[in-house]
Every structure is written in structure tokens, then in C-alpha cells.
Length: 226
Image 1: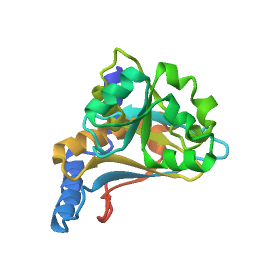
Image 2: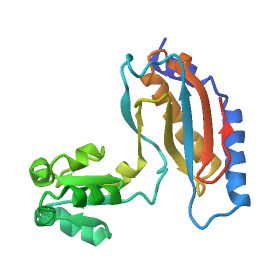
Image 3: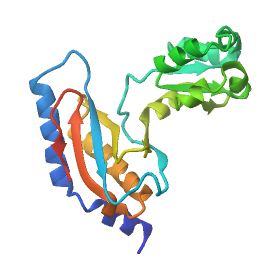
């Protein structure tokens, strides 16, 4: 079977009409009880027939067509060129001196890592990070993504915001942001489909490893989609 046919077969476990109805339920619920902030829509995944102790723990990233977390905080660790660019875009940034000022203080570095969801770093700086900051960012799972001089910094930030990570740790449940309540139902459905296709491709036995799937908004009730 062609790759396309296989992908469609993988996704056909959940009918688009059913998925759309579920998304509409979540969006309607968020509309009913309007919050002061933009609620994120999460995909909650329960797996089965998987032993995190023995089976290979998977991890993978996928870029979604619509940014699920527009308010995601990104910091640029940059050379002079990228710091100037970041300033003009209104992004937080730090140069090499700014990183040296941490004096390898673990507490301060941990606090710094916690403040942001993701980091971007210039080539000249990315090599110095282990020396300047120690393993702090790595431990937090936030080692910076490389940004080159020829890259469009704004597009690179958007790419980070649109990328979600599937990673199996010690438990058989995963949560991933797949949208927000300011999106149309079609946009959320598109993001969910792509996320699920990708997740299923990471699993050893594809759909046979999927036990349950729910979607929910930050403050809303979970809606079962599978």
C-alpha cells in the first residue's frame, strides 16, 4: 500500500465528523464559561500493551499547521546580530555576558529555565552553553534550538510555537497541546489529526497501543474521542 493509503488507514479509526462534533462540544463549553485567558485544548492519550520499563520509550516532535500555544514564552540566547533582531521583535534575549552573570548558580539557572517554554540560540553561543550554564537547560528538557544568521527569527519562533512533543516517560498517559479556544473547529480538527497520525506512527503496534483518547480545554470537561 502506498504511504498515503497507510496514513489514511491509520487515521480512519476516528471519523472526521465524530471528531468535529467532539471539538465543537469542547469549544461550546469554553464559550459558555468564558475565562479571563485563552484556554488551551489538550489531547490526552492513554496507552495499553506497553511496558515503559522494557519497551523503547519514544520521543518525537511534529510541527502543527496552526499554532496551539500562541502565548508560549521563548527566549533568544544570541550573538549581537540575534539580540538586536530579538529586541526589534519584542522578544526576551540574553547574550553571552548575560549567561556568564548566572555564575553557574544552579538555583538561578533553574529559575531561568522555568521562566520560558523554549529557547533559541545563535551558533556561536550554543557551543558555549554547557560551559556557561552547565546541564541546567538540558535537565529541564529545554536545550536551545539552533538559529542561523540567515534564518528569519520571527518564523523560527512561530515554528517553535507550532511544534509539539510526544514523549513517553514512566507512565502510560500523555498530554499534548493541540489547539486553543480561539481557533475554528476545522483548525483544531486538522491539528488533532496530524498529532494522532504522528503519535500512532511512533507506537510499536500503532492503533493497537491506543487505549483511550480525550480532548479538553484547560478548565473544561474531558470529551472522549476514541
